[in-house]
Length: 256
Image 1 (tube, rainbow, N blue to C red):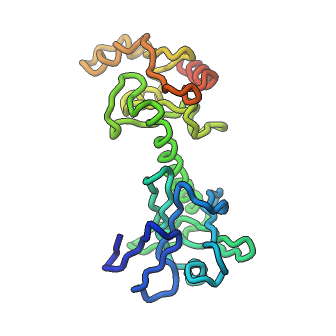
Image 2 (image 1 turned 90 degrees about the vertical axis):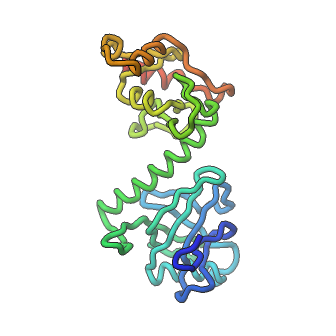
Image 3 (image 1 turned 180 degrees about the vertical axis):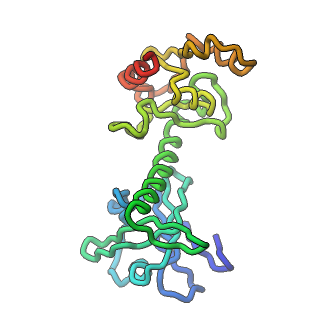
């Protein structure tokens, strides 16, 4: 990948500084889904990013530390599954900790075409947005393959129209990004499930709300009605099948 003729990413390197650039700071950072660095992790305010193995003054580590000293914006590519990355820009190195051999990264904003560091409430929103996007990408990459890339209700087999739906809503405590808290649903059934117009009981049966069953509103709704009382398609692996307690909890909300 290049910007104005200067490459800004090397898929083989975590810390990248182009040979053609003028400044001493890094241009981009990368964390693979199988990162060997335990320090590469999410935090409430952003991310920790580990130095490369070797002395703190080693070329790549020096470029990372210069990014902190100069407060230049970086592009950060963070993998949520093999071959899939979330690109974050701008990202700034907020702290440099030579003792623990890591830096802290915080997400900024683009304003009037310029990347800037944000503070306070703005930072919390920026970090929350990046964490949610990363979390959702990782969750989807786990749930959809478990269900054979099909909607559990209507069996639609078009990945671009499939979502990973949470059984226990993402905003609630204990809503783990685990396959057993997920359902592979097409976009229509996902929206209906989130709005409690469609429910799934602990025995995996589909229920439509009385409101939908009583309405007469064209062929799409009539097709949805045909799934009332049917069973969802389940993952083959038992450990990936939806948690019965979570289904019961969510179905109680639907029934109410």
